Image 1: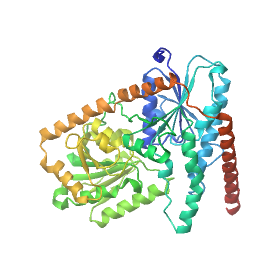
Image 2: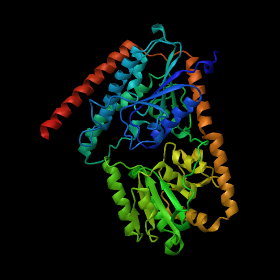
Image 3: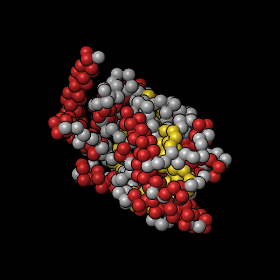
Image 4: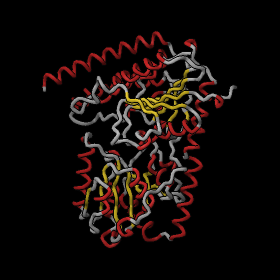
Length: 476
């Protein structure tokens, strides 16, 4: 078996939007891990807002190329996201293939890593650089965060609207599994996700789906400013996107359950991803603020670090939309506990970031946290439908655990992250997957027949998109 480390493969990563969500953090870390292992890494994306992305995506650490953002919008009137996600990625892929065709062939293998949207995988399989073109081997790895068809909201609105949504989604649901099957290897971000993938698409269709856990960079200092925040208040922290499925309301209800006396000298900070373009972010922030005030909690929202640092002492719940990474690290370094509220989260990178900083985590006893948090050692796992359980843990951390016990948990958390979820660990796992692909035959794929089927489907989608755009402009 040849040693691929002597001449590391070129890595091209395709990701739809380099924002500041968990999937984006994972892709950045994948790129960093592979780059540290000697690979030349390039990320292709359809959108990057340099004011709304991770530092490594804008400071030159990584090679970022934005393609496929000039023809199709992200949506029309808040609808048709999946349709335009497919079309935007196809547009991106044709641009990528055109650029690769203009480069001289070399003896390095080409490895494509795709996540979230698999539409480009068949195109890469059929039309990508091949060995007979004077290049090395080509392989495609699809990193599955979670099946997109299970994330689609189909039950909103009337029964008629639900039926229409189901019919609209049907070809995309079929297309997702078919497109993923063109890859040479599929990996999942957790055992939980792997089980869901197998159940959704079938075990034989995608082959041996293996697990590559996301990571954090343990070599990077996991803390920001050492200046004590808010006069030394005890900080309970929630970090997540402002989306209803993240159930941030649970953190507010659990905090309220402490009672006025035990809340003195404490503060709940709700920080995370927020985009003014996303209606749900705006609405859910408003809903959370309304919930907190209805419970008698005093709230404030700060969109800058100076305003956050100068809020009155009386504020119980502080909302920090789109908190800068440096200030989030400061919060993690000074918080007593991270509250991670989603149910059946596919993996959850935020608990890993908290444990890297030595902060215990309270999370739902479902999904990814079952694989990352060790009960009583690095945190606690509770029923997300039982507010009282969560309040009891807050009480325990604030008033019952000794300094010695907290330090023990902190050390255990850091050790677990280093052993299982570090950049080094992820890099080794990815290297193993890449080596296995390059030293194995490509997964069979009937290129001509499959390409014809795909082009037929894409023609239909393109026609639908053009019709929708024309209709939109006529209406407007």
